[in-house]
Image 1 (cartoon, rainbow, N blue to C red):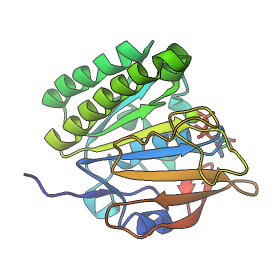
Image 2: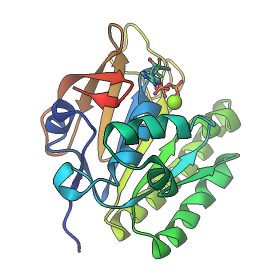
Image 3: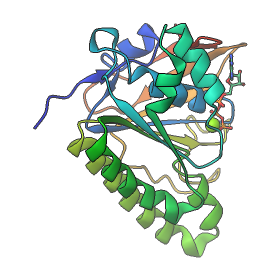
Image 4: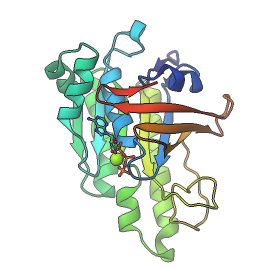
Length: 238
Ligand code: ATP
Ligand code: MG
């Protein structure tokens, strides 16, 4: 079994909250409302994974499963340049796959597993984990099936993380709901609380301007806590 290592978020405060960064051999789920910064963080991670180890990277490639067509090469370019990396090289090492529906999304994890035999894939992103499932499995009667498929998907993702000593990062949109401290990731407002099998869960919320609050929730070994991060042209920063 390979040693668990950490991937930097780009913010040293955020890294500290996470005990040094995002862990390999684990799934980290980022949840929050629209515009809370989930996709921005995914872009940043796809760049950061390519950094040398002494700069918080894993010297690896990324697979980016994009379900909402929100991957932006231009944004990668900005973030890469801010780190003095060659944006063309950085983009070559991000393998973007559009998932057209939930079934396709599940299949793309198998594809990623194949790709990881050819390239040192150390990061697998699913942005968004839940959007297709939510759109396709609507109504009370389909909740059990949806949950079963999501569980299988998460299990496949964890297997990918384990076999490749990789970081898996997934996003999940939740509505902000006053009166409920945290949005529920799998349900519309008021639904049953059904947790995913993510190892780490981070709740993101908007603050003033470019500030976002990231809160670590119910981690197995780290204390709960929150930090303020910023989304700037250069990417995610303290
Ligand atoms: P959704 O649930 O809709 O997918 P999200 O959580 O993925 O939302 P993001 O797309 O990550 O949200 O965040 C969008 C925000 O990121 C914008 O509101 C903007 O403030 C910020 N942003 C995007 N691009 C830049 C940039 N080039 N420079 C600075 N900030 C940016
Ligand atoms: Mg997004």
